[in-house]
Image (cartoon, rainbow, N blue to C red; front, side, top):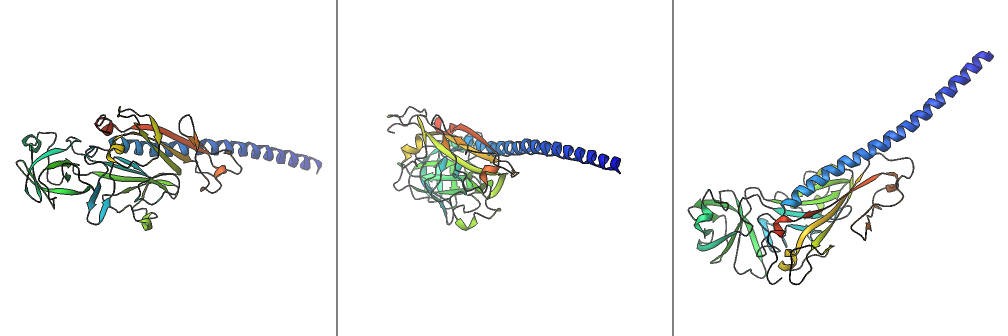
Length: 337
């Protein structure tokens, strides 16, 4: 009997030791896998945003069109269109942080558009002969989405994005057209992008404004409209990189979130600084994050995570970068701005 009790006691001690080893090992595993999850999710989200921000403004970065209200289709108008807008007035607020609206085309032509030589009819534009050639970088094709604009820039500036219905020689026909005698025709290609990024329901989501009305507050929970592209993303913060010199010198002087008010203000936005905060998928038993992560330059700012339940029991990784808006930079310093 004594021998059995001694053997049982030794066995129980062995079980306790093994359980402790297992517990410690499992804790290390959760820490490692939780960090890996945050790393992977953040990297995916960072790639998606960087890709679109680099393209932003392609076809619509000229000072004549930037900041205009553009009707995307019947009943859906995008106010103050620009390559990138932080917290656009029409977009419902994100669950955490900021929203980013990105606009770009995919035509091979110039960002400056093509000069309209004449207007044979309300829905047709006669452009320079070289622009209508199939071998020209400014070629137009049926199905391209174009924006026709008065010269000089109208006030208020209200424009429409329309499909090209026919191309005959130097004449480009569209669905409706505008009543003017000259101006510029901007080609955004067959599939222009008007995309809105926001953190919703713990995911980084994207809404395609060309297919859906991203301004409808009642749609924010609809995953078919606000499509998740990266999970466990708890915050997105962004700032404009501005040229504040007078006159412009086409280099970034400061970062802030002040909304541009004029075409010249938009022309001064040359970069976007943003940060994504990714969270581990596993809830820890105890507090593992004592202070909220920070972002920014020398004067770093804390990122508000108070909207995340038990936020201190998750692990976080921040992904911060600056993306130059190359299609804005190529415009150079604008005279008079």
